Length: 248
Image (cartoon, rainbow, N blue to C red):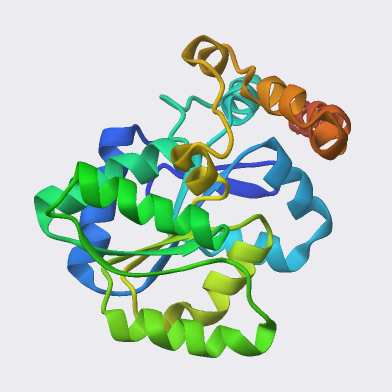
């Protein structure tokens, strides 16, 4: 994509939400399977030590800035990204777009009761939404081909995959061409948030870049490495890259 920014060993497309939606519509019209990703500090940290994940992400035609950390890093390195396009916000916008455009969707991930609740919520809110399939995110490796075949047979226009990184990136990449779904998107914990299993940070915290802190407070024992150590690692990466750029 034109105007793509390169930073911290990855790429990001400096798009607004509206521009991203337009690009998704174009992708679906083309019918060629595309993997979409969003990046944040945690994912950038993972990519430093995971070449497979880095190669997958960097091969994606559409990469959005999910975290406020990416906007901050871009600014420090002399770039401008107009706004965050978070995975959960894009997911919810694409549900509305799917109703208007007649796109069919498939939900894959989370616990059985959670994904069923997602289906129920969206059926009630958007009776015209074409839900062509759903499946929980708990499976053995040998089940993957069968799941991918079910998704292929559903002829979905959009696939939403709700499990953690790097598992979702690996899985989508492996079965992307086989499934033939035009737009495949990893949505992380979005099903849990929308179904009420977990809570999202208030708007003011999102706008101040403190969404990570809200998550940390909810699950400190599970999240301390990702957010406390991870944030220090990310800041260090930005400092190092800034020094390299100044020497050039």
